[in-house]
Length: 399
Length: 137
Image (cartoon, rainbow over all chains, first blue to last red; front, side):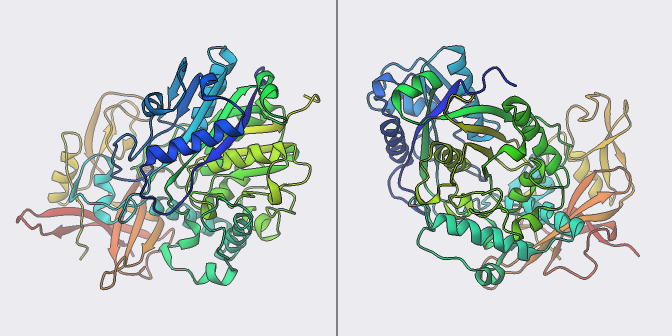
């Protein structure tokens, strides 16, 4: 077991308004989320001394105006009201925002700061998300884009196509996953689809985006920001009643075969995910059988299958059956994406997953609360890409 | 005929691939140290970090590893099907191809394919030659 297990904790969290389009600048939404997180953590901005984020936008051709298209560490250093004594920061470019949390945990354990604010601001620009405007392209994309292979959806579609063929799985099972997650979103006041029902029929009749992925297999691009506050567990207990202990973190470090980006990988996603989950189990001193609730990244729905299999919640090739049998519903053996996931809450790029995991083990998930949830797994990123994850645990003396 | 909206912008590392395509040859970088091919081309061998790399002709035969069909995005537009092809010459050596329209019958995982070369006229009179894949009986 890792010596850092349980020594840091997520204390509080907050979200800005999450919308499909918001005329307000992203910087303003980030400040709104950060103020909400600090208030939730009962932490005055004057006591905040650490900042960390993953600022990049996950689509082709993203503009990079700070405060408009992204919100960097530098932006918050310059703009966060009342934060006058920041002593440490980190801005990561690999491994999703969970890797910014990893950095924050390390800084707290190293004793270089006492409280770290981590945020993820997401921009939804006008027009088609990730549309190509270039007529010429260099780099890896010169071997894919001329063939119409321009979208990240295609990347996930070709991997899922092979998954379906290899295991004889059907698209129908995924309808259960999408519908179950939507039911969670209906109980989540932040979810973009909180007021919209989704039925199996709607899922199965939906238009294809890149076969076999339909509209409801893809997360919803949104504009907004989510933030959380981490402290050492000792200090966290002075701030809130039930902080969420960080029992383990891990990052995907697998060596990937050289293929043209955005292809990434076709078959190795379960093995790639396992490099993260194996490290989590070993550091937390827990196994998949001891996890009460899991928030599994679902930028595209098949990633949930890959994560379920990588983490050992079911055997390889069994995920669609596990989902169809109700295993991932709120009353199932492993409630998954209880807040709606990115499919139904909106594309907060994994931050929604991290926050829901913290809510569940803190007993603060409201109508979505999984009764007796003491441990939660949160995985940020598709197993095909660089990813990172956390195991969280309820605060208590038993550890 | 596929009419690509996006055309390649070759650099020093990739230009030989496109130049060979104009001669109807499929060439990929090969490492003299470990003998493995790479695609896309890299400055170091991604398998063994070898530095003795040179383009070499490869047989353009392989199998469909996967595919996806992307419907028309706007009214009056057309669907297209993307192929991922694994070349027979080396496990895991993947190239992308494209077929206009909905998925043709021959496009299925495991289907044997062979390279062919599509000539795409450009607005400025500059012709693009794209390696493509079609059924191999």
